[in-house]
Figure 1: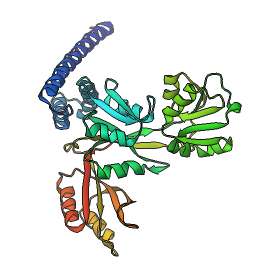
Figure 2 (figure 1 turned 90 degrees about the horizontal axis):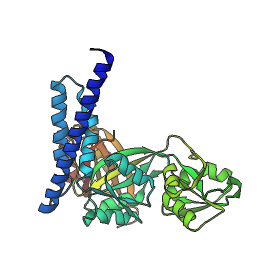
Figure 3 (figure 1 turned 120 degrees about the horizontal axis):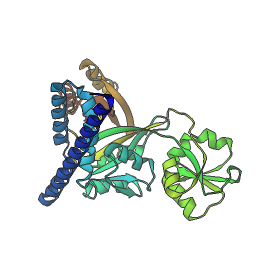
Figure 4 (figure 1 turned 120 degrees about the vertical axis):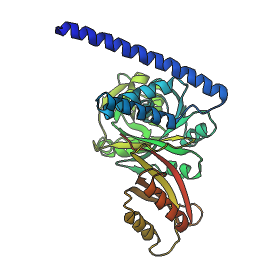
Length: 355
């Protein structure tokens, strides 16, 4: 059998694979219809993990790397999930970074629900208007998004996933605008903060707004000739605007971590993290005692920070992430200890680590 014969066999195999994926998608669509008819939640993280475990086992039997097959199947599962009518809420206008992250995490067949602010994003999932939401939780340069932490404290939603996104900002203006004619720059305060060296150097007037893509939309709709926006190249394309400068962020190591929120968190995947919020007695060494217990249990803490309780001045809640799922043996022991030790404890969710 020569090279061309072998390539024809590959083409036939590819055709069969695509046909089977199409068949799977049709079945997934039917499953989505049954779930809606029975009033069941569209998302089923436990079932998805079982599917991935099954294909890993099959791959092993066929002597194929299970991790490679899992990576392929995650995309197929994402595609199947999207045709079941999954809606994802995000803060901002079409073209916002959060929208891009939603498509990156769930695939491009989902429905998206732009929301004016983070409070509406949370409410959309709480009221069943969306099955998931994507919210930024921290930036590698500007730090945490405090409003999200405050909303997580009061909300019934659980963290069911996380992902990281490399942020690259552009200076965007109306078509035909020259850089030297720009006097004012609009964007979300986090984006402006990430580009402050560039913006200071050009001595622009800085005007914070509620959204990056929303700023692009605004200067277009209002025809602002001497204004520009800081946003993504994707936003420039959506609104038909010109990019005056690329990669204007101060530091190329500009990443934002996002949480995926839903009515329930994820079952154990074998490579998880857990996020909690708690408070301890206001006495010397109280926090140290708990952290020492984590060390004794050899539980790896990946993040800790404090936020005001909003109930009494100068008292704080601690937000903490650690490796492992809340149902795993060691994390379960740590949480049991903290429940006895802490004044307050809330598990925000367990979820697979960002890939």
